[in-house]
Image (cartoon, rainbow, N blue to C red):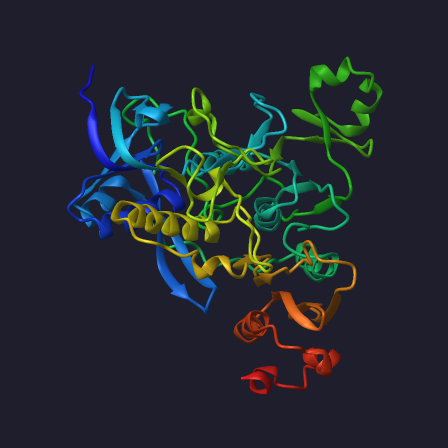
Length: 482
């Protein structure tokens, strides 16, 4: 049996949270040996970081081999193996490759896994990591029609990027993108799906690597989550040349999937001739059946806690994540967590909420490193300012999208007020007011309003006197409030 390795700090997970945490702690304790355990040989690294405003940040994500990180931080060791078992009371981590680490501090950043509609079905594909995105590309290249189930970020990006293939998109809500915006914003974006020629993002210039089996036999383990530009540099084309129709089925969910043989014995055999010959047939809860080449499951994720629960006493949140306090500590001594695997249990700021997004994964990983450092140095630490206001920049349907605060009026009483300004094909601006004060906003397009609105939300200035003039396009609001 391999000798036990003594380690000050062990971090589990090669995604954004884990790598950010490892980089931060390795730079803060250059004389200590830091260990990063990753199931994937490719690590998600934040590059081109830009602080856009007080809380908004933009960055790219690059996949890099573990050697890059070790060269950058000589005290950082990357171990390519998944965790087999955690003995939190004994401060021990065992890996699939047979190594045992005794730690002083441990940070779990193992991310989340796809919430698949059906497990182990070759006709259902979940998109979560780079390998599954490449598998999707391979299958799509031979497809005439696919069915996409889900209404989150990956579903939104996917239906827009797919070319030369019919898409049936089933969303459980009354509008697309319910997680990110309201029905008004959805209506603003819908025409972009119906144009024959869609504007594409520039092809990705980043290096791409192929993941192979890593030492320790963990090639079947989950890779880290996709970044915000997972589809860039991948050609998402089917075989139906010049046909990229997207048909949206609202307020319905996946009910059943049949192979050709199963459909013949299901009582729907009479419909098969009308549906045509397909590898798969999907029945939705609205009663409709569609034939397709395969189904894409994009119905969200569940925290990847399984390797850590057996024999330990972790407190779990309602969504299954490891519950963490405002110092990113779990209920087990000296065990911290960050990113998608954890759920915040502290009383949040009135303008912040947790969402499993890459921006929050980076922030949590960075803050968890600072909390572990403060613990080791026995120094006090305050909750970081990034948890004061929810903020996120992304891109949907080739439009820049900025979300701030309670952008969808989350948790607000019925007396809140919405102001909307919309210029077709150009911009959509929505402001959420509560008690005359701005508490959230959705900005789609090049509005240049994010910094001004961020200041108005943080300052909580009474905007009642301005009324609808707040969004008057003839008033330069930036000059007005600066």
